[in-house]
Image (tube, rainbow, N blue to C red):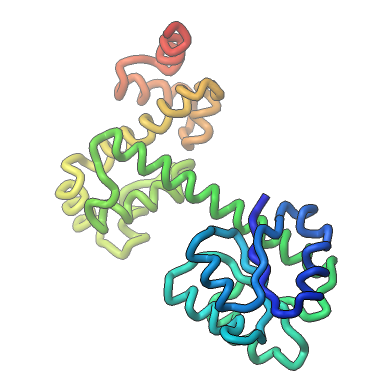
Length: 256
């Protein structure tokens, strides 16, 4: 379940929102409630949430000011506004500040469900991206490279995260970051101490090793996941890097 912070100064509306079945049906739950933006900001200093569902006009700190303060804090929590027809200009300001969406009052469960389903898809994609980036970061560290050591290495790691299941070349990364082919090759060797092909192969095979260790994948499945043209070619590269075939490596894991 994704946790929601409900912010609304009208206690009757807070009660109505809290009783809507749409939240749980879409995978969300109202974890906490606040009567205004000021109280909400205090809660957010102590607890984390996956969504802020808030009214726009409230005493002390309204929804727009709350979102502005969150933006200044580099918060990435999605915000959905509930606004009246005469508050469209406020809602527009919210969207400019980065609000995920807004709903007109009175909020209908059908409309709420549509927005929550889109938000759920966004959150799931974000979680998947974070997991892949962490996995790639771990793989880089396994071959002795810290992704935070330079902007160039970080950019390269992000590219690997976004394209780890594809076949790509040094030219592709160079073009993506606005480098010439020759310049990219030089600074790559300077930062990594290895050629692109060496790093590319080691990272892919290190990731393959991690997948094999889970015990959930066969060699041909990993070959597909990592974008190799065939399982035979994957096996060849795997053996060049590790000294063993994937099947032999997996067999040793099972024995141990």
